Image 1: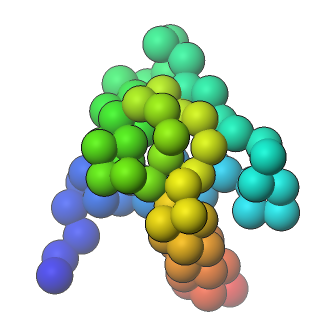
Image 2 (image 1 turned 30 degrees about the vertical axis):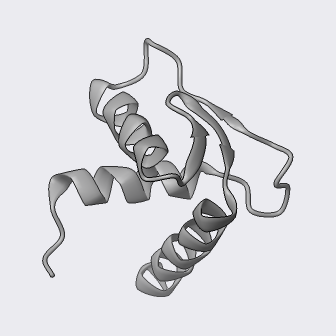
Image 3 (image 1 turned 90 degrees about the vertical axis):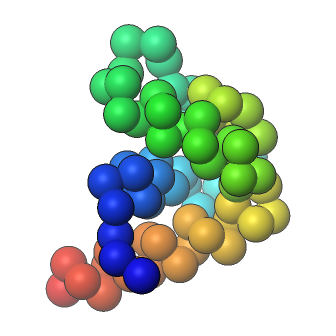
Length: 77
């Protein structure tokens, strides 16, 4: 499987969530970059976040965000 631009954008949105506080959601404003807005909509359609403009991570979203953020930490070191 190769990384597409859409997947990279979705990973970027997942990286924005604070995994230390699951009660802290994310609000993607209409003034955000269009690619981030669309990535959030796709994550919502996939059941990873609660709202099309952010909201909270679902249980599956928490797992995805944990893996995404772990991969970023590993690759950035």
